[in-house]
Length: 429
Image (tube, rainbow, N blue to C red; front, top):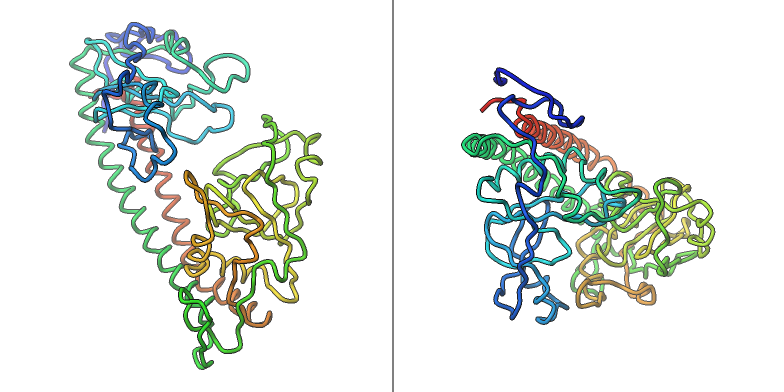
């Protein structure tokens, strides 16, 4: 049973509501200042990154393409600094934008760095800004359709401020409670990984060896596939494609509402996820953006870079396609699209794709190389049987994964609610 404070008073801020009577609401500039320390003379070597609400040391394999001279403009970070990604507010409303530094290092100056004043606990401010992020407060800052905000916007940001000792108690309380939520979420994420691994094993076996074990096997001619049923053949992906459309080109102008723009981010594990990223183009720009080919139900779409090799079938035609997507319209008398989707998600196809990919900062494949990508395929009736089999055996796995994700979302909502109620004084600790 949570306790409330004895007395409350109006905060003067509508979305904050009432706060404990002994708290005050201070403008941001009285609590923190902008971090303007820069990595002059390259005194710091450790590169940090903001990832999923955590500031982590950037892995060396992701440092490709950066030159040492560019690091001089990076901001120096020390433990207790707060980092906020204040860019792309209009298009990206799902990312976790706030992180608290645990390590020394440097991070791009494209992020806003905050350094708390001595009477303010930085971990408390981090928790407060984390709750503001969950409440989407940042998206209402600034004016008009500004994509970015800066320290000027944070100067007047209202900061409910309890006494320092109470800030520290709040931090300790939330550290314990959020750790419990995080452990429960991590357990469910591991279960999802195991379920998806099971699904991959079933898929790999069916699309490379078939579902009739009595059929003799022959060598496919490719080491990374091995033996395939003797009545199968290795088919170039484009051999039975009626059309191949590469939507590479100029990035279309985004608008607040209009025609849904399917980007590479929306294509995940054989499906189009319309919630993971929501971008739109103007209806008047649609004919120009889609001039190379309009979508039809059952068309296959394939991501060529960042991420590489995600596939899905078109399930609605009132959409546009962004860069880094190729659309194939298959001859259904020779290739069943559902079977091809499963085959392209298989380990052997993804290995082949990795062999043909190029690029230093991000691996990608050009449309001109698609003919080198092959799938193992039986006659079309057997393809349909395999697709039906996989639909059946993986549907239970998909249901279990979906249930776990619903539970994770519930935990995340409860976690965010607990943080918000605590830092806004609705819970006494």
